[in-house]
Image (tube, rainbow, N blue to C red; front, top):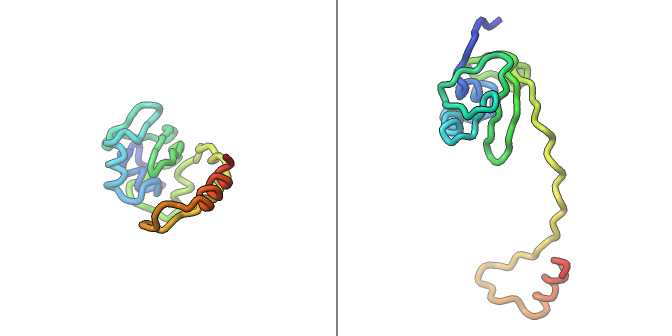
Length: 123
């Protein structure tokens, strides 16, 4: 068992696979995309068991609670045991009507093509 009481937040985010690289986790902290218990976190801030960590990477926000501290990157199965994921489910994707894509440099659409485009858009 681990006897750690604290760990750096950037290291922990990387260890539990919320960020692909350690430098990516550090950059997320610098950019203000990491919060610990509701406050913006710097990379060297300590996290403890029970802390809530919010991480926003690639347009998705993950809300997790620390269950176990790590310093080294572990497998996905072990990483899943080290946190409780409280992230709400993503909203269902809306159906977007198909919009035909014209080849670049193909010129202006013909009148028939413009009508078809307007019909697809629901106008």
